[in-house]
Length: 100
Image (cartoon, rainbow, N blue to C red):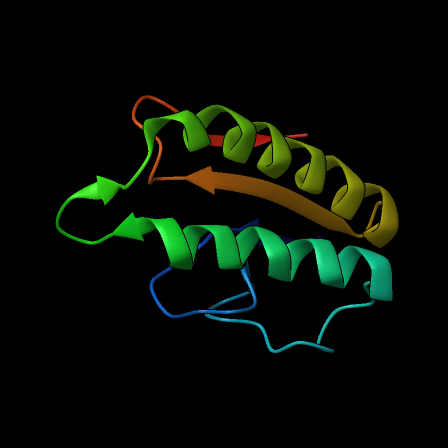
């Protein structure tokens, strides 16, 4: 059976992984390095995205999106074939959801 993992930021959430709801840090076999990168990506969202006004600097959108794509790929590689990693960029206009 394949476990579906969603990589997605949400307001005030520091760990951007979801498996049937928010996953806790340590729930999935993620290396310390990748865990640090995931938390840094979530911090960028929490520090620069406002629920009413969106991004405080539109120049952050492109690098933020690229980092999300990189993290999706890295997460899929680390987790392996028993997992299906989807990236949900609801906060990026026109991006939607993607799979590796």
